[in-house]
Length: 427
Image 1 (cartoon, helix red, strand yellow):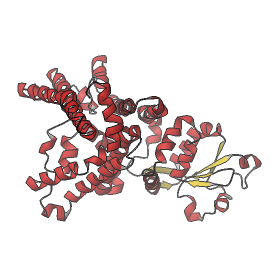
Image 2 (cartoon, rainbow, N blue to C red):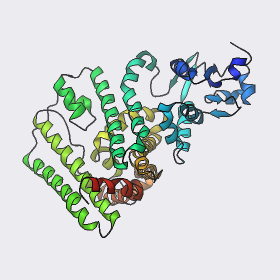
Image 3 (tube, rainbow, N blue to C red):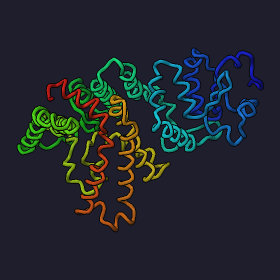
Image 4 (cartoon, rainbow, N blue to C red):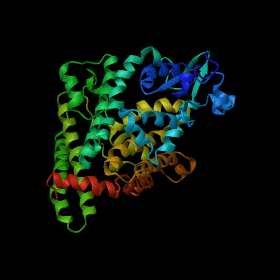
């Protein structure tokens, strides 16, 4: 190990990592060649002169990765990751996304949280609650995660060439495709059936994310009743009326109102209509494909609304890949808040980025939802009757509907929804 910086290293940007952390070493080895192609050299933080050069105490030294540029600028943690991503065209969308005013502090917090909750001893390091044996199965994990990490960057690269509403749908589909592949890959490893018909059906003809249930040969669902078919078709028809008739009527009065009417109509057509009809078709064929929307207006608590009634596809993903791993280290309260913050970031990608405005509002909306869910389970919340009865229902509807303009903010309605309605002949 070198004890002093060499002439060659003076000309490079230096990336310092913790050599006593197995995960950190694996990342350094995996990205070493790529970073080297852009003039980055990797060195352990334990190199004797590093602490003196960076002006850090021994206690501060291993807190996070560091980046030292040839001009003497020093970056740490999430800021170092962002600065590195700026040098690669395929990672530049992540840099731009991470530099949004509302998201930079969140990325710094997330990086710090991961760094604080790893444990290192005798050269072994793992993220607490996420398992320390991931290195043994790293190849399969990368294959499963790669589409989810790569696909969302593509619409960002071509955002300026696409209409805002097209960019929204491309981003939504990219995230959807990545999640579908992730859940399918995990279910496949657990031995579910993967014949071409069921594989095609799950990946391309069903929006749900419970691959194990869809692909399982057990638990055949009951045949749906006629009334369920009727209500699904009725909601589809009502949504179509709102989109192609009511939105046109109200547009001369208020474009913002027309946008909201059309947006509600599209939600009815897709989430409550077409997706429910797909569920009915699959269940009629003996495939376990439960509806994604389960009468959300009947929810008597925010936990019930977000957990069991509204878009259960996302809940399954969030519960499996965010809440359950993080609960072990952050506790139920911290994990709950993190799930809602992740949901906010996803909606920033789909809503705020295509709209070129309203940044941070969707994240703020879901932060409020998380606080509401946590508040329901406090002693004060239970004494107030939250989570049950009419008090719980009223509280749920107020928290969901009150700040909804933060979620679907005016820039999104004006720049994305209204042009989309015009493109499909609705206004």
